[in-house]
Image (cartoon, rainbow, N blue to C red):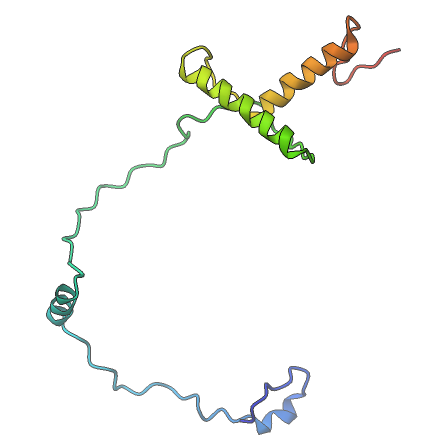
Length: 141
């Protein structure tokens, strides 16, 4: 066989120059296997100690619900470019809220999505200053 790959665009008649003699079925003679005793001896000599097999426990059905997973209802991804300072501020707030949660002041873990929603509500209050807020699906007419 030459040193190049055969073309896939060649017709079947031109395949006569491909030498496939290197591909042959294996004969019955295989390499002799190494005894398990020899394997254990060599592994022990080199610091690979054999552990006894652990008995298998009977199969347990998979859990239908993951523990400690709280569904927040937040399913829409908001992707925005922010400054590193804003990123650090958001995560500092989340860390403060985590500490409040661990101290027992809050009943749930605060997520980044909740912090964004709370910031949005504060911005709406600041902008609106007494004007009624629009809810999704409503309009001013």
